[in-house]
Length: 287
Length: 287
Image (cartoon, rainbow over all chains, first blue to last red; front, side):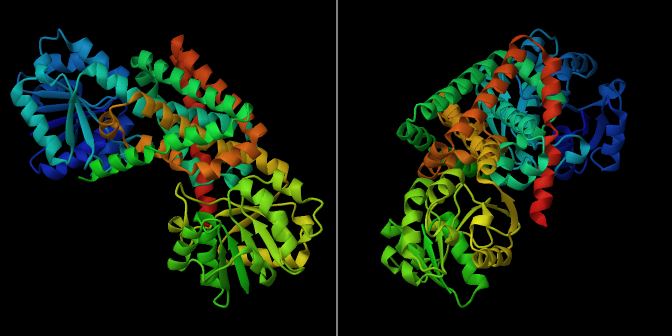
């Protein structure tokens, strides 16, 4: 089984490691615009061989794990290159635009749109982790547009690396993911910005910030190369979430300004309900 | 050494556990408005004896670890009850109001204003943890107003349980802590609220939310009883941080609306600098 990973960073690299582990016969070919990253991926044994676009005609599976702006121009070309039995899948955090771009492609049935909900705030080959996907959810969009045999192949791999599958239309995916992922990244980045701007003397941050701050601002370490095109491709949904978030913050501030502290208490009490939701996430993930 | 813990929850209970560990001769007396919590604290061996306000005259040390609205009315009365050689300290997340209330108190020199920067999102006696304070920072305000011998006693205890000390005036404490702690809690609560409101069908959250969302929204599990009076006592600073945070979110949204994605990239790139700050926190904490 010849598996091509285009983009050998956190997401693609982690997939490569898990596939190697589960499929001893698999040969992993790496393709990356950044040759330094590719060399690093080879040295870290994430990939077996360096490859180029011209080699795609020997691939059984191609996983495109580049930033989503690159993926959207790259995947049509990848499909042009591969054989009729090759499975091409993406792993991006936006699904509507890529599905739309590919809808008339003659090899649309070779493509599967996926979004493995897994990652860390780090990036590049060094960030790749074994078992990153174990117990996590993979969202598959427009499954009916993929050839049945290729669906089967993909599902077998995802199942072997420990993922649960959930099917969703691309539009719903982008809408929900804006709330549970994209908004968290923006709230974290802007929290980091607000504090950095204020605290020019960073010793004050070092000394006074606790684990709560570290947790809330963790996603502000994420890669701008990865996240800028996500916000661009999911612009409308992200703006909607931001409008609602800003409105809620305004309202909370207004309650403080007007000394309505029993309402402040209720706001927090009602939101404590997130405990059950987070426990739900944990339980589901541990299955 | 007779140590009274008034408020036997996460913060007071954890202090009690560490003091027991380091001072085998210490007898820990618990006082709590909630008798159920007190019984629980006794059963969990957080305290040795249940006590009441009337017993305070035998105390060598009194640690007031109640919500800050309770502390502000309670501490003057505690000082009225204790002997001249007793150390009374608070552990609240706001320092200006309590220092102000006590500034003319005849026993002001028996009081030390402290803020151990440690905790979790949980509360009550069951949330108490051994070694919660190890390697953490304790901020002490207006140290010069406390009798020298009592300062020494407090510092010895903090040092024995592994805390680093930082001195700060109460006004500066409240200003900085609004940025690195209070704002994080509000951003997290409002993020939780925004997502819960939208996602009435919670299965969608369960399945799509990853560890990033869990991390960013973790503080929204915090106790409203504890946090409402903190926001009330630090109202002006909290409003200031919220104004700046909302302004930054607005600006980010505007950049998205106007398709200024290279500016979006710069905003995130500049904020990535939080990595070094967070590493700084970690290193300092690990010392």
